[in-house]
Length: 170
Image (tube, rainbow, N blue to C red; front, side):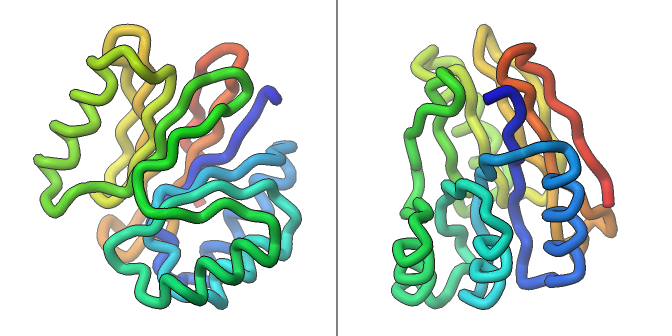
């Protein structure tokens, strides 16, 4: 597995979701990590209909948790409360949405990276792109796919062999 997609904060913006999924398919991505705030089951259905292997966490704006869980389970996807610890192309990864505040979220993510327990820490919630290394750990926030707060719609593609991240803007 050389390339994985990382997306967050889709917030039911279906045109943005469709555009992101098309680009991810063209880039040859098969695994998609979602760092929360899908929001509604119809958006999750749209994402899963494209055939990506999907692993994700709930965000603070995901309201219908039981139905979201059922949709994910029925499609063979993983969607759970944060954090999700998972193997991604031989990397030990943790996926979370975030904490209540932006600074608390960034501080917590940095602490996770400093722990040395993970090769990759993925998060969302802040709606801001953040790609950096802390020690040997790569931190990735792909920004917001919806574009509602910043006006920029983005997602990330991680090359797991090179540990390089490309931020793709829609």
